[in-house]
Length: 505
Image 1 (cartoon, rainbow, N blue to C red):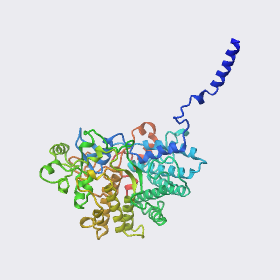
Image 2: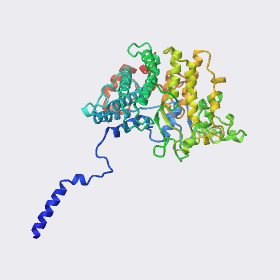
Image 3: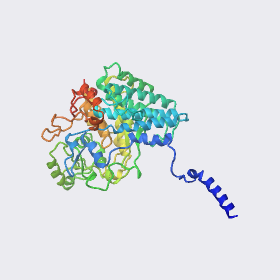
Image 4: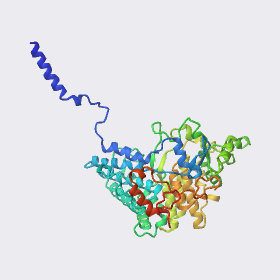
């Protein structure tokens, strides 16, 4: 009898073991990757700031002269020294391929294809804008054994980007709502379509020096998008992220050694004063010395920007004497001080205004586009926490009556363009320093203070550098293709003042 019971127990145990993996699976842990899970990370690779910390964020905003940095040492980027960029963004490409494989046959397959092309286009855009020629046609082929991709010319990369965006638009036109979207679009294919078109306008304006290139068809592509009338419609439309307790603003910190010693530049403060623009009170803190001198915090004269080209020791001494305005306290103490906007209605309208002046489009007026952009930019700031506006919050009346004095639309094309470029620069304050750096290279406006005595760009002490260097790892692992790219672009010399195809006339 005892042997019989043991035999039955063995059968039961064997049966139980045959289903061991099922009964030992944690129901709260995903065991399969889905298209939606991959999509979230893929979108965040662009929508979320990818830098390591608040100092990295400040660094990105120092090169375009938004800030100065009075901290533990001289910040190289403030004084125009930049080094290597990275191909790190391209590591998302295999995940995009996997997402498409998982999405095949699903009801939202077309939308996932749209996401794939949009993120690929944005990824390659950011990478080529830093360095010039980059791997494109063979990028992301490591799984297939190609660990040494060739470098495509920058023109070929831009042609690929434009093609990817046009394909993204086609897929979103046929798409349905999809899962896994961390942006405010919430998977809405129409909103994504509008973002794709807004981004293509931005890319085409980046190519403003290449309007004579028959392959690019810059003006034709631009006017076609505008005529299709599927763009951002108002100031609530943007591609980006909402910051919160889980995903805090990069400058949120209680560490005064970093965000608390970031100074607003005179490029920002002086132009806001000239425009009588109340964004000043949301961007900056009053200079302590000016408060001591009797100015109220709601008085524009209480704000004083740092010359970002000033000698570091002098800047530090003046900072200690309270002569400069620091960045607004809200950046340091609020996790959700503002939303992250990589593409916005305001920027789109500024791009349309410039295109109208250049004669790329015949619809609308440049002045109306300009005013649309400014009003949207002001409303966006107005909707942030007015507690930090130093008693001088933006009102709707301020927005309605903004366009007087320096803000009134100029009566000549060059003056109009400079107003548009300035407003686009102010729009991106502590939001998108890279775009403002790229724009400076394109139009050289606004004028940035450069002192040859302090400029760390030793090969061109009168200007900013024009590009980042290629990753040093390429010399070790892909040197043949790297040298081929350097030889055809820059005579074999990888240097920060070399002029890439995009910037050459």
